Length: 215
Length: 238
Image (cartoon, rainbow over all chains, first blue to last red; front, side, top):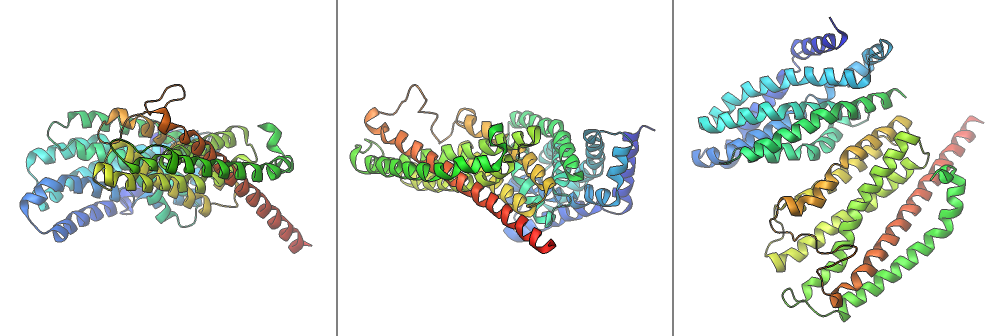
């Protein structure tokens, strides 16, 4: 097995084995449950605004795994082992992004189904959310890993990570929620462009941060 | 730039330069404000509220120039390991963020009488608000990582990543043509009448000089603080 495939498999088994992958989903469902309490369980209001709420919940849920993505590996010396093995930091970051997306994106897309039921969204909107999340979650996962690499070993990392990541994630929210409006195919393209940019850029930012951490 | 790699040499130039820049900047701001408040004619449509222009535009320029400076200094730090680059980037964060906040506040006050609203979810306004959040995030990151070599480099990476927002701010009035007006001033041509335009270069230059003076002061303070810490450490070891 190639070393990068090994990293993906290891991160995946850690994410699902220790239940870390489950936490964001529960949080996502909880936010979806809170919304009807806040605005009242009116079917028309929820139907019109619920899609955007699910996108916002997805953004917030993406913050939760940040502290388990890089810091435990850095503290245990696993990242140093990868360096000794001659793996580039950017390659390690790419493998970790793939693993993080696999443990975050598809489960979130499944969790959207019961959440959409709670908010009484109709089938067309659910399909658009699923399409948007399929395109947008890779960018979200890449951003989460880059943020995790930047904040690993910084005190107060939890609160800081949200402050650093959310401003950069706003375009995903704008275009993702924008794709729910009628005639939102332009927004889907912009969402894809943003996501692609994040996936392409994040390994380099994360790799540079991992290198900086070792000094 | 490599001449200033020696902090002592930087200080010999920065120390006398700071008061000159600060006072000339303050004079230009006063002159431009007097011109903008009392001498220029009121706008035929907006009346006296147009005078916010002379604060709003320099603040917007310095908010964006501040992050451009952070990004340039961060690049210098990562590529050439310039010893003063991280000091400069940190020094620019607070005034840059402050001018971004002034830009948003003055724009909001200007928008109330002319647009009829304090805030509109327009591309230019939204991207400028994101810039303010980026400044706050950068400030939190630098204060959480201060005093460590790796922390400086991590802040530098974020400074470069955050620069993606700058072209979005610049082109936002073209991409989403909603409420904020397009570009009306360039280096060579302008769509503003000369009788109303002339105080603007004064305040822009004035605030820019003041910005540089503040950055130099903050850099000198940071260098002095480092010196004090090093001396205390030597005393503790002795």
